[in-house]
Picture 1 (cartoon, rainbow, N blue to C red):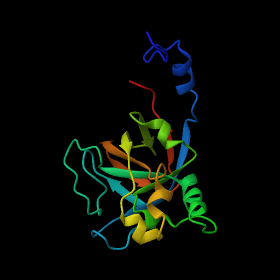
Picture 2 (picture 1 turned 180 degrees about the horizontal axis):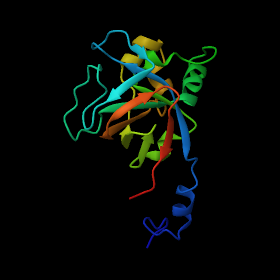
Picture 3 (picture 1 turned 135 degrees about the vertical axis):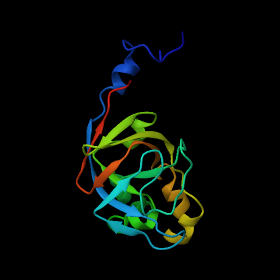
Picture 4 (picture 1 turned 90 degrees about the horizontal axis):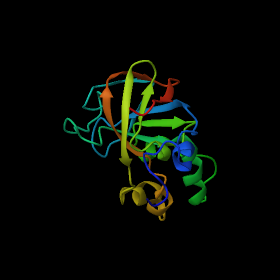
Length: 173
């Protein structure tokens, strides 16, 4: 059996995968009420089970993998740095729904997270940048976002998401 031995809880990789920080925080919430229009920054939003955030124009099909988008708070400064901009980027420019701090989101692919006391998301994949990043961020915007575009998720259990809510990694089922 080649290394790493996926599924073998005694393997080094399985132990390492279990050591990621288990707590994060919602820093920002944004809704896209109309395609290509300005984001609406909100303090809370209702996540509808197996659908989307209420008030967001996205209408993913039930069971879809891109019902909500998340981006790493710590990556906002990295992308700004790649573009030679001071400080951090305004998350509204990147058009993701949730900004999460304190967790390495890329380490959570195919895992579930709980937000606050109600909402459960399944992280389904990367949210790659699109050519619109060149329009929004200027020349080099697309490449600055590569590897920092965030993640997509499916809403397994809906409820209210608030800025300041804790984000916890759920044990593997």
